[in-house]
Amino acid sequence: LEARMQQAQRLESLGQLAGGIAHDFNNLLAVIVNYAAFIIEDVAGSPAAADAEQIARAAQRGSDLTHQLLAFARREVIRPRPLDLNAVVTEVQKMLERSLGEHIKLTVRTTTPLPAVMADPGQLEQVLVNLAVNARDAMPTGGRLTIDTAEVQVDEEHSAARAGLKPGSYLRLRVSDTGTGMPKEVIDKAFEPFFTTKPSGQGTGLGLATVYGIITQAGGTVQIYSEPGMGTTFIILLPVTDMQAQETNGEDSADLMPGD
Ligand code: ADP
Image 1 (spheres, helix red, strand yellow):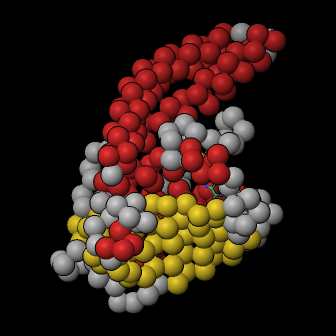
Image 2 (image 1 turned 180 degrees about the vertical axis):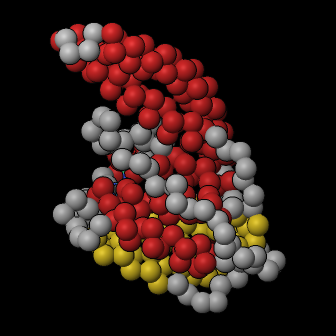
């Protein structure tokens, strides 16, 4: 538990640091983009204009990256409330299907009815989106993504194995892909901010750090089961609340998918 709290604190301060740097960089990059645009206008048609366009493009790319950093560091407007996990899953299903493409088959299996969990619906959608984006990247030639929900009991005996969770009722959200899988060295670092195995420009290394932050803040745990060539399964456990679930309708999830 001690180690988990230290890890959470480390992620928190890294997030704040990243947010501060991202903000300053974003301002600098805006200046570069603007002046490059002036040059492009001033010397239109000359070779210098083409060079200035390269500068503008690189600065714009940098600006996009810092926006992702800011989104990660910003933890405002978290409104936890009693939620129906199945409703959240069903709500993002359409969006996921669209962004996964035709070569990846999405299967959703919900156990109904489920008791409520305390969480922010937008954040849980973010978790699902981040895991789905990674699954998609791990299945470049196609495959299957399976999301399922269930209620599970953690007893004294299992408590240690479940990363120190208190005994009680939990909802299990399982996200499984048939992709490349991960070697142990990658699993060990996967939740660290900025850790990525993707080519530069394609991965920020913030997807799983965000998932980790959201789930631990909600009192849950997230674990990775994976082996190279055997696909990857994320198991999330969230504590059940006695309260009655509230409607999640009206949440806007359209802007959660990374743009490119
Ligand atoms: P990013 O996706 O930007 O690289 P993440 O924090 O989301 O950052 O993921 C960190 C790393 O974990 C990825 O670069 C990848 O190596 C590995 N990873 C995450 N999800 C999966 C998955 N479903 N299958 C295989 N590897 C994964």
